[in-house]
Length: 150
Image (cartoon, rainbow, N blue to C red; front, side):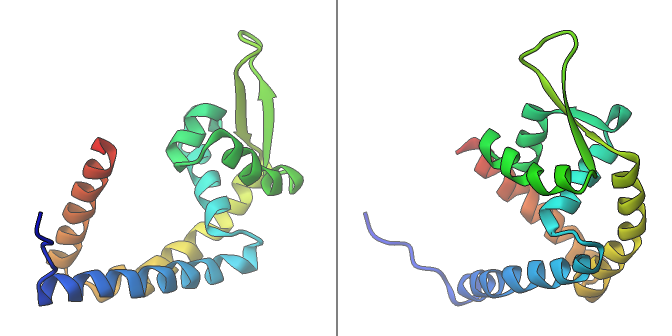
């Protein structure tokens, strides 16, 4: 089978993506650092804040964060130590564990969220036109669906 090389435009898109995403994530993480959070911590806290009773089953949280169960255990270490999240066994099924956002974690998230949003806007959203944002969302939704199908 012959290799289907990238066109000039396709190569430009690919290079822009790989050369920018790491820098973008580092810049966003730098803006979270004053709150003692990294990107993963922030995402975990945000997901818990949006769930019923600010808690999720650990297996569901791992899936949402795209982590293995052991990866979630490692991710949880810091937020547990800082008392931003607690972990509890289900009273109905001992095999089920929950992660729950603490009051301290929720307060920190409420403090960090405006700065995080400002960072995301300044570094990404505000430099794109509405049509570029729409294309960006559409493109990455398609990529996500394709990865899920793989």
